[in-house]
Length: 254
Image (tube, rainbow, N blue to C red):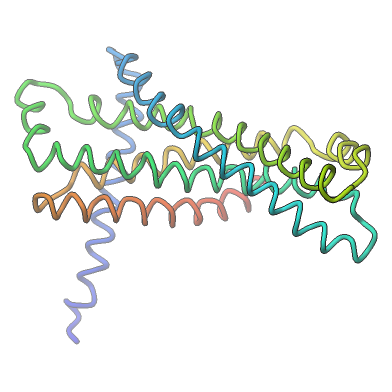
């Protein structure tokens, strides 16, 4: 095996990382440059946020239910059923709420972003925007990144609430855990910082999956097959990047 064959994947990775970084910095600069394209941003907020509500509703609710069920069987051995509430609340607000919301929205909205922009690339619609003196980054990428940055925390709040409500339903109504103990521990030990840091994570995850999806779509090559490949890579890379970023942010924030 030659040195060239070993270094080729590394060069490709560094090149793509550099291009993605340049796209991110260009997005940051263009996001504050007039005109702001508010109508495009609102449209993407509806697509990323409102249309993701069903999947977030199901994910958050059943995650909280499973957490309550599993922790009940563990804590019951030590007579600590009263800790189920705060365990579910901390797990949802710190980790599972933002991470699962990011992963699910990346799969639903991120794949659509990559496919849409990739189709525009292979059908030369992006080239047409350049010919018309329109910046394709500002027109296509910035609204999606900004919308994801704002909507992921909103979806995470909903997921957190539904997860805690699902845990309450299972623990209190189904398993007969003391309602006062369940709610009092949450009120006593859940701090605003736990919720706030989870929302910071969610905002970062929104930027990550939207940027990766737009980047993969923007640099699509190879016709219809290339669009499918870019869409698959966008979802896989977004999910892996969210999990890696979760570890980094957790080590920095908590």
